[in-house]
Image 1 (cartoon, rainbow, N blue to C red):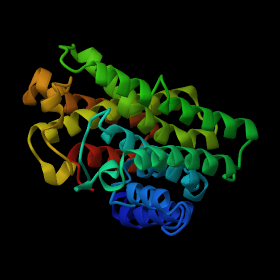
Image 2: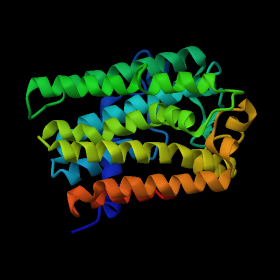
Image 3: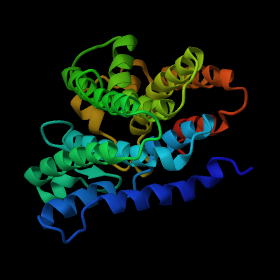
Length: 295
């Protein structure tokens, strides 16, 4: 049987095709808004979150076609968050994935509206998706994803991150920001397939533990890439966190301690999957990809 990693190009094409099908055409009115939405989503993203959802589905022996509408919707939500993150009132970045950010390309007003429209489209797609289980499970799934981007998830994490500028935080506080800002949407990706199949409490807890550990490790690794100046990997300014004196792990605790913490979290994530007795190879492969940034 082919490994999950070898099928990633095929899965990425499937995800990209679904994203393109759901987005407005570039000449659809209002044209500038449609073009900004397309530009923000179809600009070379690694599709880590939808791929993680597919890996989780494979682990639980769930049909990939069933979760695909939710996988693409998660990517739309991720894209909406990146547009907001890059705005002058937030992180004020001019590059994303090596290209001009949406507000640089289309202006702040259109960028803001594009982000709003992508969020709306994501929930429309999820609401219209065929769901093989009960309507109650469908609604609970959408509610879980909504919560992951709200004040107790991504938006809350971003707020805490902005408040952290010029402050000396301890490791626990920084990791809490990371768990909310980055980890919650990744967790939603990993847990979405659990709404398609009844699982034991032990397996649900294992997936939750895996997602929390790998989510924090993912963000620390991002900080390390920025701290070590790897523009090719991160695709944006490598001076962003440093110039704003943000509470980034390597800035506060150093490169070596950050690398050690990534390894600890990766090991914790891997150990949590032992309950699946070998059926979790797809999630294990995605965890390695996240740590090594080889995608």
